[in-house]
Length: 359
Image 1 (spheres, one colour):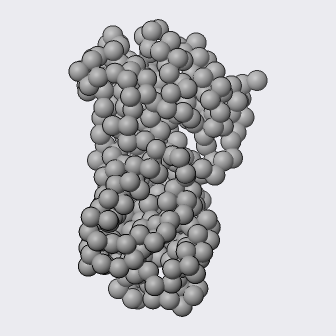
Image 2: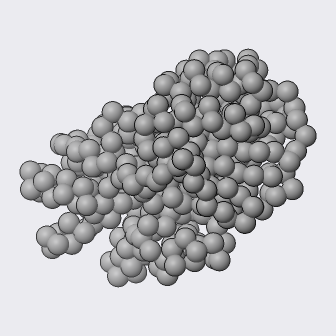
């Protein structure tokens, strides 16, 4: 059964097939643009014949349920409304993190006549057959966040290795190139986790930092605090912590404070809960951090790339989006202490839309 919820003239559909809702707690981050296989940068088998608008756009989202994914969908819904002269409808589906469901949704969206198919994938390769069929029917496919390896998709993402390098380099500099750390990493087996941590580990080891332990805390605040507690007990003399997620960094800070320990350098991400704590600690104790940020506006970046391509612009298959970096100097431009911890920065949503989302 299909269930739709109107938002002005835009249709949002979620769940199994084209109905239902998901409540999952996994992180909302994806692969590096360079991580997809298949298709060469010089090939154009990902482009389709140019069409005139307005366009019907479909988004198949691998899952919905954590705050990053929820905001990511809100960002593109708002962007579509602002582009109503180019976009006649936006259809959003949610696959409940299920490969078969996402493949079915791709087929359904193609049957409904979408001109553009955006995908935040469940799997790097399991959707490739369905995407090939979509491409063969003249649908422009754009993959973002969790990327697919299909040669028939434009790939839009930030550079996840650069994310790790930024945090690792900052931490090594803060520690003067000496001392011990442990790491709070994301979801074990995730390409994002491996790319971020692989890059950070190399920078840290090259700088002379000793890594005494690591734990996978799934980019989750509670799990990050629990992991920090275990690792602090095992390694009480660390002088820094590497974290590849803002919520985990906040959890580690809370554990350090609960133990009455000196606050040590920890990089983070654009998670408002961390940014708010960072601002307070900056003022009270001079504590600093850095936050490379994989923003939920990546969905809007993918939409804008798709609109260029479907109008006939010859784009490279791999489109790298700038990685925003929040620093001690620009923190005040991003932090929003008047909004919940679960807001992700930077955002393109105006105040009125943020109030709807978090009010």
